[in-house]
Amino acid sequence: MSETYDVLVVGSGAAGLALALKILELRPGAKVAVMAKNGLTEGNTMYAQGGIAAVLDDADTIESHITDTQIAGAGLCDHAMVKLVVESGRDAIQWLIGKGVDFDREGEDYHLTREGGHSHRRIIHSVDATGRAVQTTLADAIRASSAIVLDHHIAVDLIRPKMALDRKGPCQGIYALDRNTGRVMTIPARMVVLATGGASRVYLYSSNPDGSTGDGIAMAWRAGCRVANMEFSQFHPTCLYHPRAKSFLISEAVRGEGGRLLRPDGTRFMDEYDSRGELAPRDIVARAIDDVMKRLGCDCVYLDISHRPADFIAAHFPTIQSTCQQFGIDITKEPIPVVPAAHFTCGGVLSDKNGRTDVTNLYAIGEVACTGLHGANRLASNSLLECLVLGARAAQDIAANLDDAAMPRSLPHWDESWVTDSDEEVVVSHNWDEIRRFMWDYVGIVRSTKRLERAKHRLKLIFNEIHEYYGSFRVTGDLLELRNIATVADLIVRSALYRKESRGLHYTIDFPELDLIAPPQSTVLVPKNFSDHRVL
Image (cartoon, one colour):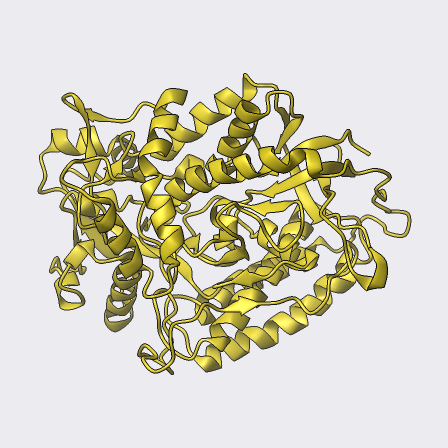
């Protein structure tokens, strides 16, 4: 058994690191650990390009940002949560600046850009690599703090001791695979925070790094937490299309600064789909591109910023320019080939304004959580804002209640006495590939009931194979991720089948219109029973 921590943060992106630092500010003597699936700086935050949405300009208003968020969310946003997050934006940005994040300036003021769905310029950024600036700054602060870093550890499951009357008690820690040693550790903690990010790697094509396999969502579901709005998977409209490029995102800020979407023949098309053109919300732009590609039978469309001056492009998009240059694309002279890719999970573990979940002493913040902020579609650059604001609020709640949380004692060790090393890794790789392919084909940008039923049927068969495999062999990182993407895929499919309308990111050809009769409702799934750590 590992040493016991006051707070164990599972995940090392902006949400997890911000929370850990805030707790140490509020409770300097607390024993805090940050667990990273890979290195401390690996994760979605590192690859975020655009920036952070916040009302920082006198011409902008809180009310306008709230309205833009709710319009993008297609009627499912929680107004109180939107108001809370948006009103906290300036303080969140000031906290980052205080930590040393270097945002771009234009004269004496910070440079603000505009992205799809926003009615004003309100995206503060660090060139086109804002996530890198935020992630490295917070990671450096964590390394300089008293926090313990457990890198290259992948969570297996949450630990909830069984209580009387067949119920389970508070979360008291996790089992985690130490990838350095290959052994599963028991890690006790008085409070556990899930900051594990989203699940976009459940799809074949994604802008996310390989680790975005929905681990926190799957673990929380198995532990008894409700999940909500899993049908709303956001597809970023513009990822670089090139045989040697691995899911490189072309920031929405390119369209915000005048980038035009073109058919292969060079003609624009977005005005035919939405009056806002290239600045329409992401779900609309992604569906438009998908429609153009299917109608024309083309492999991609093109994003052209070459009409802007070369020095402007170099100053605002240096990362995009240099990356495209590596693949022989000069964005100052020619358009960029782009396709949509899975990008953000709008649903997740149901949590409140302080990050609390259904399980006592378990919190969920960032992309792993469903707070009501995003509704049926996330407004661009609200994600890092959510990480910072909800990370701070959860830290305050944890700090205020830490003394009331019991210190875990005598937790069961992970038992490997009845399993062996696998001799059939092909089962893992095959199922991993199959899930991601049929999720892309059947549960992607455009869906149908028949496609969803096909996916549901395939998942039943795959679950049986995973269950048998998981019960017979020692766990590996690949097996754990396979188990989690299968769980998350099932939650997405079930949620999509429940929604008999098209709303936000969920578009089905069988119900192509909004349901205007019934009031808008979130899709909430409730686990029927709680599985232990050995049962899928």
